Length: 312
Image (tube, rainbow, N blue to C red):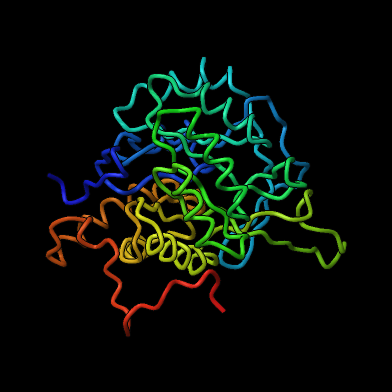
């Protein structure tokens, strides 16, 4: 067995490297062999067609970027008739990321994408919930539990739940997702922020606020990965600011089973390919037989205390 092989629940992966949703397109097939990745995670889509947020949608930041894309989507029918056939050519687990603005709509979409060729569903529950005054599902344990329970009833596919860093109760949210039937947690989505052009005094994004990604948020994502892995019994997929092999190893040591790479792919489209080669070389140099031997091996300076809901 390859030193890189791992499993997220019942789903076998040849390696722990996969793209983060929203950073992975069919165009990358012209850059490197997409068949080498552990999984393919597609851009989040909604049942209905959407144009997304007003422009500008992206701005650069020190240590990363900020976006307010707004989940533009061609809708469910386009996914089933165009997107799914393209990815069927690869012998790689296909993870479909979905979003909706209500519990019932999430459940209906999960049922609709539970078709042959889809290996798992990633529920992007960081979107606004119209049944909770526009607050994202993932910022509270009760709304997280409710939407995950609805999703669990709607599909027999493995259910990955993507959590938000914009919560004051990350442990409770992670535990609520697990209790409601999540098979894995993706930790985490982008961190809400804002930037202003001092010449025009206008926000640098058309939506005013947006999601920060890139190396600047890695400590937050790493902390949440450690908290989620310590507080639940299901696999955790680390996501946030990963650009180097050392970053991948850090997330694995913190308790992640696999990782997702996002912003770094915008900066260098072959980042995931580089990380795969580099991780295998690093394991060999360290004499580590399996990537799984790293998981959750953080050496705490004292006996671990109960994981706090929020670090101060």
